[in-house]
Amino acid sequence: MTAELLVPKDHGFGTKRVPLESGYYEVYNRPNVELVDLNSTPIERIVPGGIQLRHQDGIREIGLDVIVLATGFDAVTGAFDRIDFRGVDGIQLRDKWKDGPETFLGVGTSGFPNLVMVGGPQSGSVAANFPRGIEDMVNWTTSFAQFVRAHDIVRFEPYREAELSWVSHVQEFNDTMLMSKTKSWFNGHNTNLDRAEPRLPLIYAGGAVRYRRRLADEATSGYPGFAFVRAADDAGS
Image 1 (cartoon, rainbow, N blue to C red):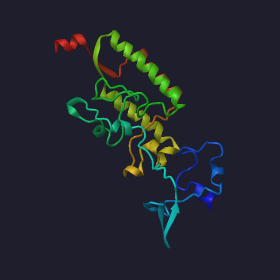
Image 2: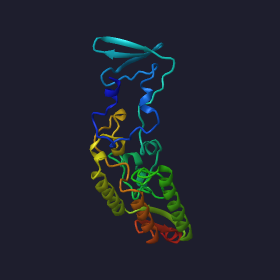
Image 3: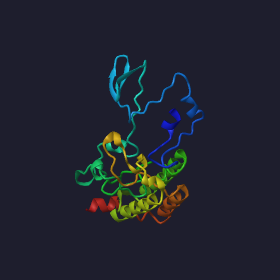
Image 4: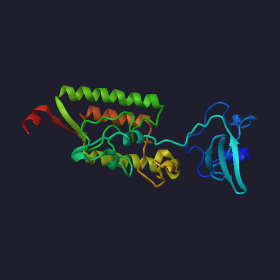
């Protein structure tokens, strides 16, 4: 019965993150461990002695000393939604992204000047070993900041056309992946937030090498995807 509960029924192998910890499955065979399927026996309430589960034949109480609540998280965009980012004309970032994130290279978004994201949505960080993916973005951002200072730039933001092109590219790669057919946080699904409908992809599935090359091309070309305002232009406006 325990082994059967551990077999996924609603998605193919590898389309969601696979447990890779040593001894993960063996833990369920320990005498002090019990696996409970909350889909068939949902939590009725938390009580002083533990948790009550609702069964077809009544209520069952499981005695517990400690309860650790791990009911999911709002991946990638959650942290951005909880900060009151406001762009041109006071638009809130969470409103712009209500149907999913729209970014340029995962480092910026149009309408929000001087905002640079590291490890943001639609970047390549999740498509690689995460620290290495973030390292790529930090290196690129450092060079970008040096470019901005060297050219006396006081305002920058991605062109909307560049942003839409990147979102289309991200979507194109996402559509080739089996994970795009699965209700996963990779695609912005989150039943804890009543957000199970399809949204724009949260991650770039084109791979670290391709993403790194795209960042390099943008830099060596003089950042054509960005609109710049220099201090001299700003003073004369």
